[in-house]
Length: 286
Ligand SMILES: Nc1ncnc2c1ncn2[C@@H]1O[C@H](COP(=O)(O)OP(=O)(O)OP(=O)(O)O)[C@@H](O)[C@H]1O
Image 1 (cartoon, rainbow, N blue to C red):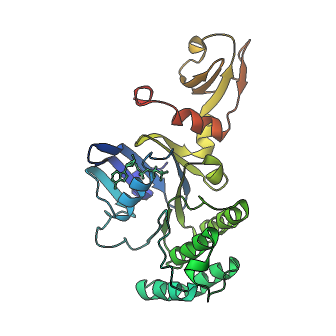
Image 2: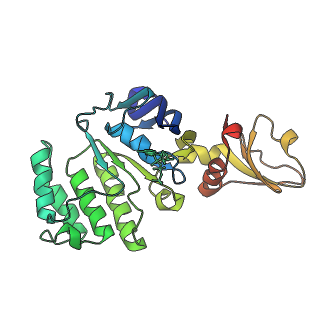
Image 3: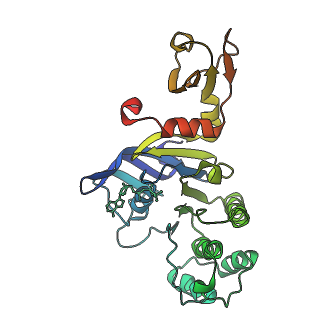
C-alpha cells in the first residue's frame, strides 16, 4: 500500500483497548486513494474497532489515525467520508423515501438522483418501510444513503454478511461500478475472503488486533509461492521466509525460483496466503 501522503486512510502504531482486552495493537497501514481495500480477519480480529476509529466513533489510546489528511472528529463524520456500520441502523418505521430525505437534509453534497438510481437498480419501491425489507434490501438502502453523499472514501463494515449469493453479487457490482466511475476509495471488511476477493485490489489481513499483512493483491500473489517436497526447505529458499508449513507443503515469502529439483513450486492463490497469515501466532509474526 502507498505511503501516507497520498493516503485516503492511514494509521500509525495505533493501539486500542477495551478494559484489559487489546483490540488493536500497533496497527500501521495506508489505504491508497481510489483503491478498493478488503480488511479480512476472523471474528474479533479488530475490524469494526479499526473502522470505528477511522470514523471517529472511538478514539485511539495511542498512535495516529488520518482520514483524507485529517484526524477523525469525535463530533461528526469527516467531510468526504461515508460509513455503513455492520448492523445498518436504519429507522425501521421510515420509508425508503424518508431515509433519502434524511440523507438530503443532513448532507450538503447530497446527490438525490444517484441515490434514487441505486434504489431503483435494487428494485426497491421508494414507498416501502425499512421494517418490511430483507437484509439484502436494507444493505442496498444503507449503501444508497452512503453513496448519495458522494463520498471520497466509503467504509463498509461486513457489508456482504447475511446476503444471499444473488444479493451479494448485485451489491458487489454496485460497489465496483461506483469505484470505477467515481474513483471512490472503498474499504470493506469481511471474515470471509471469498466474499471480497473479487472486488478488492488491496488486502489488509488482521489477526488478534495486529496487521499480519497488507499490500496490493497482485504484489502479494507475486511475492509468495508454494513449495511442496520431501524435507525441510529452509536451506533452499535463500532470502525467502517460510510463512506456514502444512506437512510437506510450505508457503514461502520471497523470490520464486523457476524450479527446484525434487520439489514442486507453485503460485499460491489468495486463499492460501490469507489462511496462512491468519493462522500465524503473535510469536511467529513478531
Ligand atoms: N465496546 C467494547 N467493549 C469491550 N470489548 C470490545 C468492544 N468492542 C470490541 N471489543 C472487543 O475487541 C475485540 C475486537 O472486536 P471487533 O468488533 O473490532 O472485531 P471484529 O473483527 O469486527 O469482529 P466480528 O467479525 O465478529 O465483527 C474483540 O475481542 C471484542 O470482543
